[in-house]
Amino acid sequence: MVEYKLVISEQAKSLARTVGDPQAAGFLGKRIGESIGGELIGASGYTFRITGGTDKSGFALRPDVPGARQSRLFVGDGFGFDAPREGMRRRRTFRGSTISEDTVQINLVVEQKGPKPLAELFGAS
Picture 1 (tube, one colour):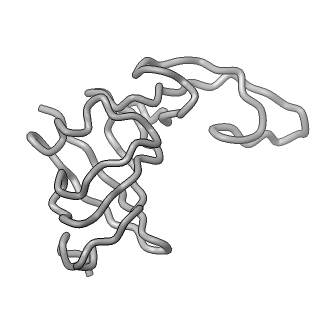
Picture 2 (cartoon, helix red, strand yellow; picture 1 turned 180 degrees about the vertical axis):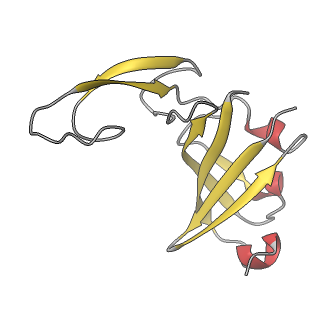
């Protein structure tokens, strides 16, 4: 059984929601940057864009790594590594940009708002 924790950002607010089968199956094979309809998670009228996530080991999904595999990249200051000195680089582990069974958290951003607020739809305060 696949289960994802969704973190949905709308301007300055964020909401967390957990989805399991069959809703979670709709995320399999999607990539960072793709848009999904809100009907998939019970938010009719909304459109969301996938912006990132993490896998079961806590490694971040990186948009420039193809597939769903883990990869060790030599990175400088920026995404996934904050260099303490200028020019410093390190090898860090990342997960590919495709959502798979190993993904635990998916980050979403609201692209198009629906008729009802998200807090009302998901029961958040």
